[in-house]
Image 1 (spheres, helix red, strand yellow):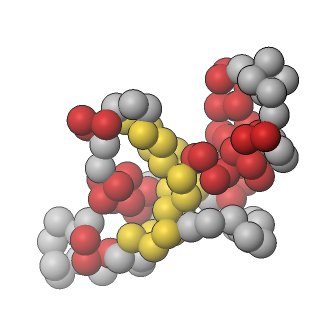
Image 2 (tube, one colour):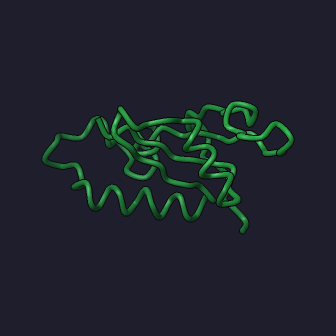
Length: 107
């Protein structure tokens, strides 16, 4: 699947593959990790400066994030803080053949 380039200025992190590979003999690419809080300002410009009543509801925001993930070849990973692992998020992305993950700590 061809993935669209990331927008200029989108803050990302790199998760080196040696941190999430279960088997050192496996070769995986590094994964680009994107915090959903940074992505929201891309899919809904001005999201963080909007009045709370002007912001789209969670269902609408989630649908826009999911659409962005599909267009950009990214896996979406969300967990409560006690179950959250950026390394597991990266591993899941790679297991799906992706090198990008949008992550959300639901706590």
